[in-house]
Image (cartoon, rainbow, N blue to C red; front, side, top):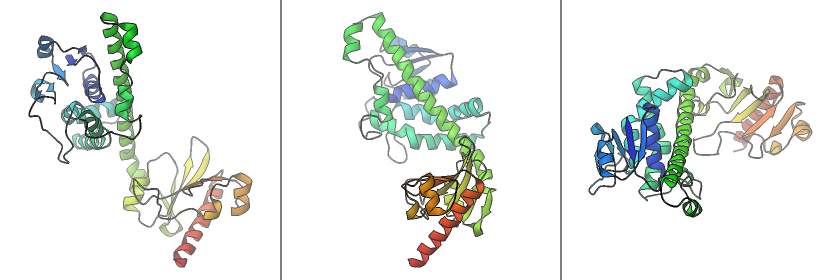
Length: 319
């Protein structure tokens, strides 16, 4: 396979699109050019060529009259066009390679939709000038743009093969970064899918108000939020850190508000200070935001949980 994209300055949308194709066709040849004959002869033409025709591997969005957009109204650029066509296949391939899991077509498609919503649409929005994907200078599109040669590189390299080789190497670095982001996005979602039954089957304590997870790395928040309305706190064993944690349950995915906060008197305390307030000898810290605390033992975290639930009940009565 020959994959062609435009030469000169690159953006996150073309780098993402090419990275997707190289996951599926790793032995492909990459050419960055604006030569018409080379573009027409390629198996894939990305962000160049003036044609959008997935059946022939053409994924450009710059041509007059192009107005293809998502159902939400977010316009497509090359990242989204290639992801719409190949995203589910890319997700399935990455899941198999990096988690050993074979996804059903529907599961792969749903994950592809989610990654489009979380990442890809913002690359497209940035490319078409509709919005930045994050404030400041370190949104993903801005980070990828930073791989382009700056004026000092241009002055040093001049014009010719050395300059082209450097630009190509920088483009491949951007592809590698975006590939890692894809891999991490897929691994996270596969992990969340596999964790569902473990979280649903976890031990429920204190009349349904407390959930215990043997492995604190399990992604639990979405399941608890949606399916366990009585749970106020989650306690878990952090295998990596060999300690036990208590977590408040956030009310939504994009909020720091919780169903119940840890006691106000614990906020920001550590070790002896926290022990003095709680009476728990192996309590180690409570975050100033009162959404997480820790103890060295299961018995210690259970006692912290009991105290937190008592405080929450008293607060509810006061309200």
